[in-house]
Length: 175
Image: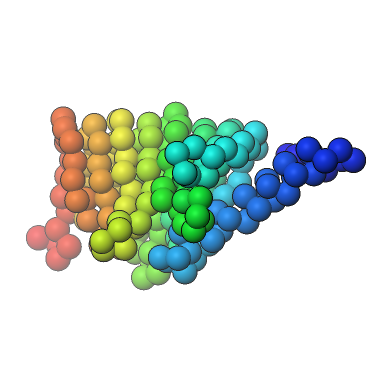
């Protein structure tokens, strides 16, 4: 972690880093009104690219928001430069692990993949989880293993999957 010292450059970098630490908590909060919490054991790097502020973190990254927990090797937070709105979080891992608990106490949704992209749909404001590469998801109603899966968290709905795929569906009424 960066620490301030007596020279101006480290103080500016420390101030920028401190602002970046608090911004991810504001990021998705515009849509969900809940902070995105994160931690990482390794390096954090902040850059500006294509009118976006990019926060890269390394080593044992953990991200959580509203009962969603994601862990992986590294993560990239992308947000707009002008409004500080979070656009997406991309997590890479071997694998990236995903868990979503429900308020109803139902069985959690779990999954893993090589890459996971976490964002809010601009039109519906649903939380979208894209699992890419060796994607696996298990929910109370289904189990699926595909090349990639797009999952809507609020609806426990697999919106799209790219094969080859295999899986099982479970009847909700026991039939």
